[in-house]
Image 1 (cartoon, rainbow, N blue to C red):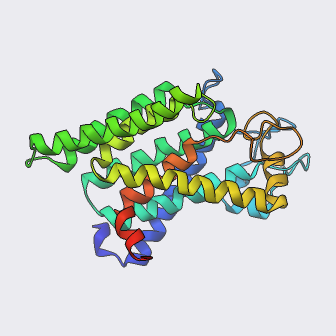
Image 2 (image 1 turned 180 degrees about the horizontal axis):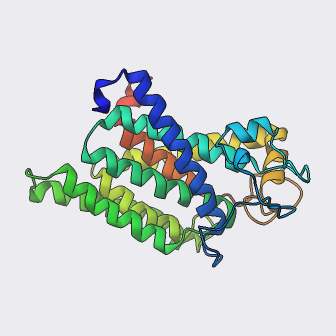
Length: 280
């Protein structure tokens, strides 16, 4: 029924739905592994004041309140705004690429899990095993949906090799560097993501993760105001180990780059070899 509506109307509804899910994900990210219930009332992180209903509208409330608590005036982390907006935009992208199918439902669930992994890793420099396990279950479901009725041993082999290549590459970096270059959690995450992409797409996935990481890291180094924004958004020992400034030796979570690279390949089916041939 929804497919009969104009595309702009469909995208608007999906965007709003994505905002609602993104708002809920903010609660999940904040309360995950804290022992706190997800059903509790939202409140200001500074003064503890319970938020009124008109302060809970995704994006709109943040903008109308100028990013500050109505009661105490303390700044609300930009993360809340960005998670809501990013989730909504990704939902729209998935809708336009996979509408409507079982693959769409799977893709929306995947966005939810990967969003939590990305932000959690940015704040805590760790990827919870439970989230990697959920991603792995989704990877198996993806294969089942994608190859339902056309299953073949060749397809399974290519996907298994994709997962192993992703895990062994990042795991090798972790082993050689003794955890200084990359975390074991990144290698674990690359296993289900590589399995979903299969061979040879996993090669593009790996290359893009480093390209994206290099672009973002160099941009932060090149623009001091970005560094100051990071210091205000995150604690000293989370994204940037140095309490004073971001340097080329600073420790940076790699999961956001892995997730971003995966989504680019998964959504747009980009191939790095074809991309590089344009410039040759």
